[in-house]
Length: 242
Image (cartoon, rainbow, N blue to C red):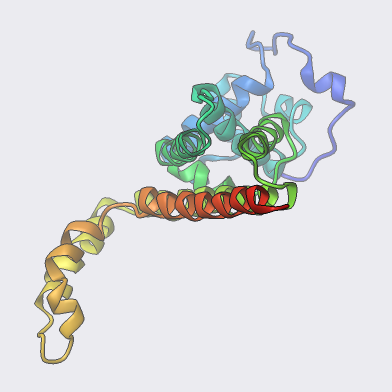
């Protein structure tokens, strides 16, 4: 999609049939973009391919999005929105953050090409704003001071999105490359001799079993444990004040 200026915001939201009879909307375009990315990769995300997939004149898309970057922000926001729609707060701050993080990560793996292209962006859109509000609410309601809540939320969301991009990029590799990477732990690391690589040799079976899995669940638990320890110190400090 080339750089274009869109009409006024109201025009972007109108829902009327195109010449081909298709009723376009931002939701339909974003959903189609996600499907094209999943099926054909980043190269498929052009105004021509989108128009063909939607059965619409490609120029009609510019009523809704300025350019590819504008569309990618909407795609990123939709991935966040899908995680939020599946998330339910329980009142247990650890469980709530754990579930939200795992949902964000799973959503990225469900759409790896889209995640690689968009997960590192700041959208400023509805779902991202809801996510920030919800995450801060979980932490502040748990008793974290405001500055600490912001710092922990920052670490939490960046960890989730960073692992989303990392693991989605691995999922996006050609099958042969992915298999070669996975086999490397068995074919190379597990065969290194103990006289030259004693620590690798001693842990080889664990490396083979563990390194082809995502480290995100374990990293998330480490972050939540560290946050819990900090909360305990704040709570203890408040109790001991005269």
